[in-house]
Length: 507
Image (spheres, rainbow, N blue to C red):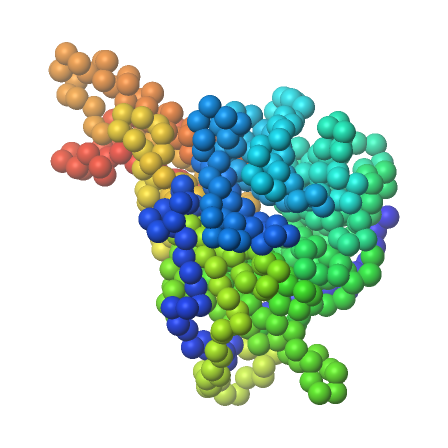
């Protein structure tokens, strides 16, 4: 069954709203000033008691509402399996259900007090990527799980597993790459995929909608129904809400300032919406004295106008008091209290002789950062600040390894590469590993060291590919090459020679 829906676009443009910012807006929790074990936060979720659960690639952390911490890193305990966290949700008893990819893929159940109760390992299927992208718990205590490339899994209340994918009978999914999942207040399960939007109640019957592109995020908390953001056929971001099952109504029409996608969003009491991207954006619905809804005034924070100093926000949630909690790629997490925001309007740039509609259309044509740019002579993609054409190579910044090892020193560089691959789904690349230069061929150690260099360069590239694939990037888009120490770029600089290079194969 296909249900036709009315849609509207989030128009991304630089608006007229400026902010009077102060240090009190944001509070940062990082590895220096708190007990947070790692700077990059993969997921963040607030429970009914306003405890903030923070997932990282190492440990799970709970920052309690009384300002105490629970760090899941106690040796010789069940804490040892609470690692590599990718998603978090809560059941009606307050238990946390946590997605982990530590030594295989599993779902962990943790009590509100922080006790690890149970580990549920996924059924093993060959060549399926079971990385948990999202979790939603329904009223029957079923855990609906979005996987990177294995469809939807359901962990029943009794611990049994069910699975739904494109091969399942009477199941209408068009893709096994599940991007987001949510359960609304009526018990409807909403499933976002790389190729469309779907819904079901219990898995026996599925509905598909006139959305045939990638769904970025499904929101069901803080809203009386479900809202979904997705990329339309022209590459624009759409945002739509279902205030009645199978019926679509609009959430907002204008206000987002930039032509770029966001990583996460959250809604508070059906009115305030906050988004996480390379900035933090938010607005609150307001009505006129006549009861008519006003155009939303968006506020924006980034490292240039506030104390939000991260390069990118990865995830976001809102507590019962409306405080916003934000995970980042490099600065731990932040809290933001919207109640103390002061807004100041400033004139927009003077644009004469052009209608508002034309201005919006012009801005929509601006390419997003790190997306494919079409130019007259030759198509390119932008990696960081470098435009790269098909067949060209570039050294990737901030991908660093431990000495004589393929273990990454941090994930900043590879996460940026992941964001690039996610934003450019048609791009195919070659990753080439290089080490410090080999000895002279006349050296008695040449054979031994050159072989070690060749193996190490290959292992390092495979480590980067593993990072990408675990997060849903198709392995078929990546070709691997290893050169060892045969192609130094500077005979006197070992650090420059130790690198991973990217070459564009297809745009």
